[in-house]
Image (cartoon, rainbow, N blue to C red; front, top):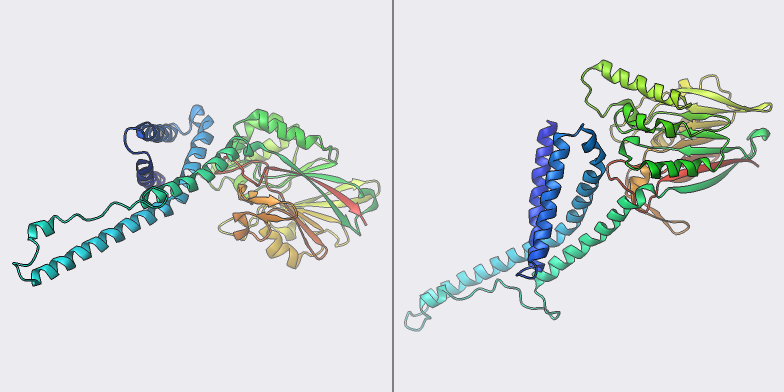
Length: 439
């Protein structure tokens, strides 16, 4: 079924590509446009060849190393053509209406001529060969309507082409440090000024540049946090995606430790395993990798951070999501069992919908919830104090940054890595530094 689906998608892609090529032909016709047309055809053939090689040898290291190039090219090409299609469809619809109008006018004129006296009518041969205007009249700009619509299609396509290409080349690793200070009246005195570093959604299977990832980790460690928390999605599908990055994961350290949870991608649910034991071995490897990195993986449990005579609780739950088909493995009741409501509590929960649907209404004593998952859709517009928007907001009311509800805070990290589209545009990869204050 997977191969059938891929074949259907590929055929659809080819159809759209051929259709889009009509706009290229309209604008770059004749001998002068021959070079442009040949370049377009050559790039398309090269892309299809690259896709074929990647699908044929998809587990070969060479194919894996080039997957970001393939995915990026496909994604950008799809978006570009998708935005140009309305103009091309409008042009073809206009052409169809012109043809119908001319056809009807021709038939009506022929009918009227038949009714006239044969001696006074124009010979039928001349009527039958009367020219029909299928060519657009020149507009005031000196171009036809078809040329205008084709230009509009290409201009519309060029905007996301430039933006998404920039997002792939530069935006994917444009790490941004967000500093947040949160004040709580009942924070234990010893933890006044305590700092947390939050990382989330690394998706190590997507990365291609170790130099850039190392730069991001160095940036995070330069904040010198008291404690580090990781809120899920270390990999895309398989735990072994993290093995090449283990040495870097070991560099993520803090005096009070590193605490982590699993995201929906960490369970291996999106991979077709040969047998159940293979999936169980994958989960065992995930545990082993985090242990080797020196992290404390928390699965529906809590730990105490102690400083002088005071302590706060870190609660970590498995993934719990209410949007789409995301799993509900998390058990917050079990994770918080035995905790006094007077204890200052920080919850690590991958999916922010957990806070919206369960934490806020049923666990009002949890002071701070840290989530990730949304990536901010990896694209959007953020100008502090003016605008904050992403397509992610259509699915998640709380999709990035800080939110406050009465005495509870929710912070949604925008993610350190990327998935699907191998880049970011406007919503940059995030490193979050949180300072807790008593007041």
